[in-house]
Length: 267
Image 1 (spheres, helix red, strand yellow):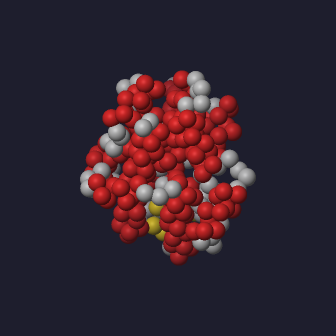
Image 2 (cartoon, rainbow, N blue to C red; image 1 turned 90 degrees about the vertical axis):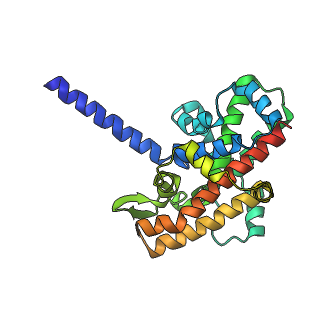
Image 3 (cartoon, one colour; image 1 turned 60 degrees about the vertical axis):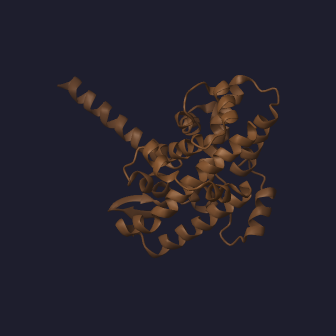
């Protein structure tokens, strides 16, 4: 009986650990894989061939959450700031873009550009370094399109903004990371397939612009999320209905823009 009780306690603790760790992952595991799968469906033949030389035949989605998983490894701890960028809410686009250039932190904006440049220029990188830089790029482009990763420093990107989701206490960061995505009950391949249906011209329009432009788009959405959370903290079906298109557009944009970046790196 004593052994049985210890086993029950072990499994309970294991379940709690899984629940807690999934809550802190940007877009959740599903959302990041959707972005990666959409990107893979839009890669050029040359990019696919070059990427396969780095990571083999494994799908991009397999590695999409690697940068979150390695947060528990002390040697990657210094990279935690690569997953987000803080922007003050009153910033207009010009001020926002200027602040991104001037910020001293090693954040998503600065490091993503660095990683892309390193892979593109192939600066005598080891195979392991190429792999890790690619994993981070796949992940960080997804992060750039999760609005709460372009939120405010004071509340840790919405982690301190408490709301209820169908009566369960949570926060707006977690809500946008995973709960809104997982509400649809799609697998990541199903979600990617239903999103990746627009024509070539529409894809080109989405892929236009700079990383700064894309981050500003996410920041504007984040401001709306904050404003809504101030008015309503008990969120259910209506919130899902009103934000479903925003969530899906952000994942689609993330995937198409990731494809553009990878196609340019390996052109």
